[in-house]
Every structure is written in structure tokens, then in C-alpha cells.
Length: 588
Image (cartoon, rainbow, N blue to C red):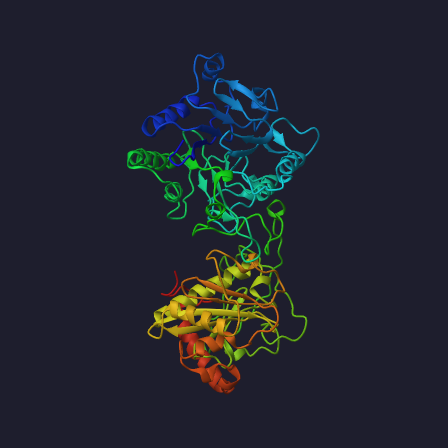
């Protein structure tokens, strides 16, 4: 065992009969850092052809140097190698876990497993496949326990469908095609601390994801998904992880482990071994304390890089990854206005260039239920304030703005709030936010954005620049918190990687503010809310020191003056504008 009573575990990807290579690597690791407690194998344990090397293990001529637990067949060719669906010993120290089930060791470590690939239908289910009934039975056997919190480890050969949602990209792996929706359902229900899979011949370590809805449910432990390459990794394929994730598993091992001076050198060698094994891509080493032995506060600690759960619907609903549709979208109407005296250069061409079809046909913007001042197709919209038009969103100067460069990011179609936006619209909102951050940064100002989804009909994301020499980001954050407390408004911090869709459902009134460092503050509006709260805070003496401009109605100008201000902003913003044909110096 590792220092502190934790189990030292190795997990391997597709072995495909290369037992000599696998066990020689395991022995080398154990000779350097001491013995590991067990080896878990996911993916194809046997190759397609009968390997004479395996016969040496079957007859006892060779013996596995570590207790090894393997999953079953993933194809009909190797199904005969697993004679008992309920699990059996294949050779000394090599055990087939079975078709599905839960393995619990004396330490309390709980390992759930599901062998094979998802059945495409038909009865009976082939021996190398699993069905909906298999997944339901496994879930029921665990969820029926009154104090079930999750499992320590989940082993599947198949990847879960949609696992990359909210996380880092798995490169060219398309989980809609190769992933299993049933495995997604299983992972969503069992909440494994670690989930391992293989078959795709690539190493992929997803960012950890949370198993609760922020501000709605009590904190729970996070889950980590790791896909492993095949032994030997002959294809040399790997997915680049987010910087810092290579060391994070090692740091998690150090935290919470107390060792004596005598043990320090042993721990150091152990950590170096784990670090080295990460580069093999097919062998993953880690130290784990069973969930049942951990203090609740320690178990639910959230790492800084945690993301939302990829298997849950926005607002904390049930698993949806198994139902991910192949999107069939209608083309959206385009809005091309001549925003200046220039006869050309203001229109945004469809992606793909002249004479080509757009790469992606966006969904049609929703229509308002009544006359709307902000839908771009509406005759009510004040088009002289518009300064940029994208594919899904547009940018306009705020009427009666706090500052001359106070702008709004608005969807072209009718959407009430950020929570209602389709994914492609959210993506373009983020692009506009990034462009504005660069634009304001180049002018010595910092970015502050806020939204009030209360007594409003159309989403207006207010973006107000604050001079850098005026105050710090921390000053702005403190001003919002202090004034919220004075007005008995509960303003909560949202974790960095959280999306509003994961916190509130469409139609829920709320207020949120986003600072230039990515921090967000959120308030769920239950009764009443001061309509000018965001402006009041920014206009206060602590920030812009212009309290007289807190109410937009006292800051209105004539249409000619507004049009001139819009033209000035448009010209200054042009190098950063998404809607330009050519990339300017402000574009990344």
C-alpha cells in the first residue's frame, strides 16, 4: 500500500496478447517504487490470433507478477477465451471479472465493471456485448443501497458518448460515433471517482467533472475519465491534455498523505514512477483511498480545473448524452446593414468563402412573441446604435450608456436570457466578449459584463469598460459584494468553469456579473430586484465615481449624437471586429 493506507493501483489499456511487454513494464515499475496492489485491464485483453505466450500462463509455465483483473471480450473472435460469464480465473493471478458486476476488496475499494461493447439490438445479446438490461441491472444493484454515494472505480472497454462535453477535446475521436450512450448513463448514475476505458488506441485524460449542480445540490466528489492506449502504443497516438493536468494526479496523491522522514524517499520514488508511467500512454498508476474511508469534507473537495457534468441536462436534469442528436439545422436569415459610409467591407461573408456553402448551417433564430426593441429584424430596433453584426449576435452602443463605449451584446433572434441561447449563439457571445476584452485592454481599460434576467424581454449582456487606473478587478468584485449586502441581495461566486445553464433553468429570474479575470457573481431573483443594480455599482464612487449616471434615462442623447458616437466606436473597434472580412491586428 501507498503511504497513508491508500491502495496503489495500475490500470492498462488494450493488451491484445502482449503480456510479456506488459508484465516486464510492471516489474520494472515495482522494482523502482515497490509493489502495486493490483492491475486492472480494460479493452481487448486477448489478440485476434491465439498467442503461444498465453498458453505459457495457462499451463503455469509463466506467472503474472501482480494480481490482474480483466474485462471480457469486445468481439466474437475472443469471446471463447472467457468461458464463464459470471467471471473466473483464467490463469494464476489473472482473473476475468465477468460480464458485469461490482468487485469489493477487503480495503473497501469498490470497483464496478461492464464488459464488452453496446449491443446494436437483437436477441439474445451476443456474448461480447452488453444490453440496456445489463446496465439497468448493474445500476439497480448499487443504487438500491440507501447511503450510496458512488463507486471508487468504473471499468468499461467502451468510451461514454459525449464525455468531452464541457471538457478538453479528445482530438479526432468522435464519441457520437464510437461512444456508448449506455455507458454514459451508467457513469452518470454510478458517479465513479475514476472511470477507465480503451479500444480507441489513444490516451485521453479528461478534466475532472462535478457530480452536483452548483447552488442547487450539496457538494459531491468529482469524477475523472481516463482512456488508455494499447500496450506498446504502436500508433503513437495521444491527445494533448490541458497544461498542468500531467502533474495534477501526482499532487492529489501528495495532498492528505502524512509520511515520516523514513518514508519520504520511498514516496519520492513512487511519485517519479507515476510520472514516468504517464508517458507510456497505456499504463496509468495512481494511489487511491477508498471512498468509505475518507472524511466527507476531503472527499468533496473540488479541484480548480473542475468542469460541469457532461452527462446531465442544463439545470441539473437527468443524463442526456445517450440521446445526443445528429443536428439537422435550418439556415438562418442574414442581416447585412451598411453601418458606415463605406460601400463595401462591412458585410460578413458566410464561412467557406465566395461560391462555397457555409461549413455549418446555424439554427433559425427564434421569433419574439410581441414587438421587441432588440430583435434585429424588428422595425423597433434603433439600428443607428448597431456597431457590429455577426452570424448569431450583434453589438450595439447602450442607449444612455454609463460611458461612451458602454456596449450591449445581443442575440439577433429573440432569446430572453443567456440560459435560453443555443450552443452556437453562446459560442459567438464568447467570441464577442473576447474581442471586447482585447479592444478595451488596448485602450487601458478592463472588461466588466452583467446581465439582469428580470423584467426584461430580450437578452442584453451589458459590457462596461473601467479604466485600469481607476480600480482593480478585486475592487470591482468587492464593490458588488458590499452593495449587495447593503441591499440584502445574496450574491454568490460561481466556479470558474460553470455555465449558467448548469445553475438555473430557462425562465428563472437572475442577475450575474462577470469580471475580466473570468470570475462570476450570481444572484437568483426570488421576489424583487433593483433594476439599475449593475449600473449603480459601477457608477458608484468606488468604481467610476459618476453616481448621476446610474439611471440610463438621465444619460440619453439625441439621435444624431448617438449615431456619431456609434460611428466613432465602429471605426475604433474595426481591427477587433468579428464581422470584418479581413483579420485585423487585434485578432488572434
